Image (cartoon, rainbow, N blue to C red; front, top):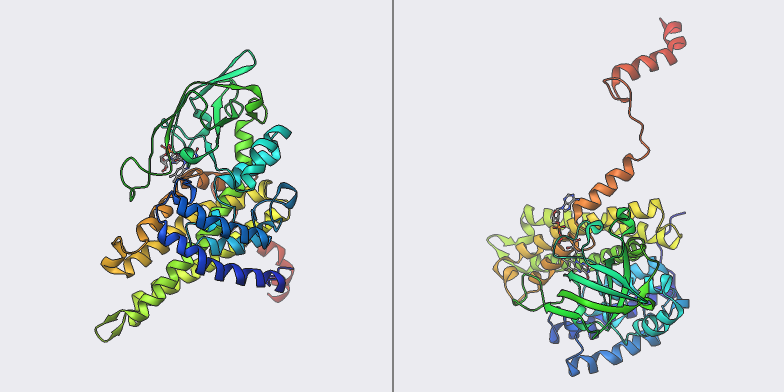
Length: 432
Ligand SMILES: Cc1cc2nc3c(=O)[nH]c(=O)nc-3n(C[C@H](O)[C@H](O)[C@H](O)COP(=O)(O)OP(=O)(O)OC[C@H]3O[C@@H](n4cnc5c(N)ncnc54)[C@H](O)[C@@H]3O)c2cc1C
């Protein structure tokens, strides 16, 4: 039976999260407001302010909500994580304060699932404890939407691997203690068996950060998504994460969770935008009343709220599939692909409407819409563009559909009517 109630004990925790985020985390957003600030350890003030907040979250048993307790997480499952993430999504710092930020969350999931005992000790434990940051680097400047076309090579040399190539949009690479990099180990293998993942520790000789790349609203040459070059970078075989040729499969395992976590946070971002719209609409005077008295404004607010409610139920269902152990199966993958597309569409729509309703102020650097719209654009590109997920959804929906013979479809009314008449013939004849 479907049940949308939240158990009282957890509802109390959520109440605390709401207050804590509004009081403590939003202050971090306002004072340390660069997009990269939550991952940049160079600000002593920010780090000093962050630590007690993280300690409080740990003390309350809400740290690393994406992970089960045996991997060092809160062990609350994905549905409860949604209720937390939709609050954190209203802020920039929330995920780092609660230890569930991407890409570290996805990286911790694959280290837990595929890492060796040594890798777990060296990388997973400090990552989950919040003592390290990480990066996941797959996309290359030559094209990212199709991960079967990577060019970065890892070549075996005795017991080592030697990596050469270029990557970009390697989010947080400049702050990361290690980078999980995808490289081609067998260019002749079938497309999904060509890549292998490797863990590259920070400072490994041959790792070059060519430049930082940021969102369009960030200053040139700055931002959290660097361009990387691997110049004959040498790693022992023990740095391999997962089997040779299994890079694609391992990477897929991290993306499902990552995509619904983005969606959960997007709910919070959209709710924040709707809150801004409602407040503005009753505050801003126009001739004969306020903005809320105009039908087009009413439409924008109502349609945004209706769309968000539908989206939230969609994400809840996907989260529930994960909790039911179906997240990585066919149904789960379909749900995640649908959520991925919907996340991009709804954020683009609601954030744009909210920005527009604020007029010039909405376009200014005195409101946060520039940052929000950058995130909306990201939702449509990162982890694969919308078109690729639309293709997956359509393919999944047609996989078992048989072609219908003849010129007309099975729903063609004349043929159906004839069959129905034949079925009901005794009644028709008796009444004639
Ligand atoms: C903010 C941000 C953070 C990111 N972080 C990371 C990260 O940490 N690690 C990482 O590895 N990557 C990261 N990425 C990269 C992201 O995964 C890629 O940008 C994405 O996969 C698309 O690749 P591309 O940019 O090369 O676009 P392209 O592959 O050049 O595609 C461009 C456009 O072409 C169209 N297109 C492409 N393929 C198809 C298709 N099959 N069908 C129809 N249309 C198509 C789409 O409109 C698409 O947007 C990040 C991206 C962003 C924006």
